[in-house]
Length: 195
Image (tube, rainbow, N blue to C red; front, side):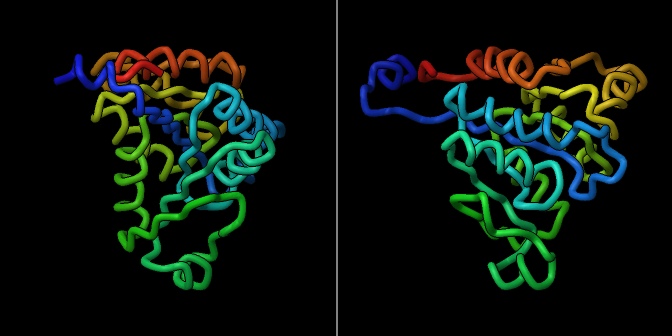
């Protein structure tokens, strides 16, 4: 069956790359948001779709960059509806083409978000970012860490060393373009259909 799938001309699936980062960015490096915006642009330049937690802060800036580049952005919300997304969670609707309302709160959303993506890109983050990182790591997903952005992005190498589980499929780079290239190379190894 896989050989038949590879030869099917009408399959044109896009790679889905998640940007995971802090919703509150006061602790991030001064240029973290601009670097994350560039990360969103680079995802589009490399013909992928951006997936975010449909939130504020770093993922929102990644969505802005992706939309500025003419890309497609999917949000995965912790809320059960658009009304709850805006009123209860105070999350944005703009810069996204589709928002999926999970109704699972933040922990459930994080699981769905990382599982929906082909790879996860970590930028300046906090506890939620660490949660998404560990889910992706346990699922053996490619993970890219945008170093120099502050927060959890600066802690990931040490966390991996202290965990004594190896480096998994985690790559590091301070340059958004180089980071997306590294992650896309790992994603290509997971695909049946050539991307």
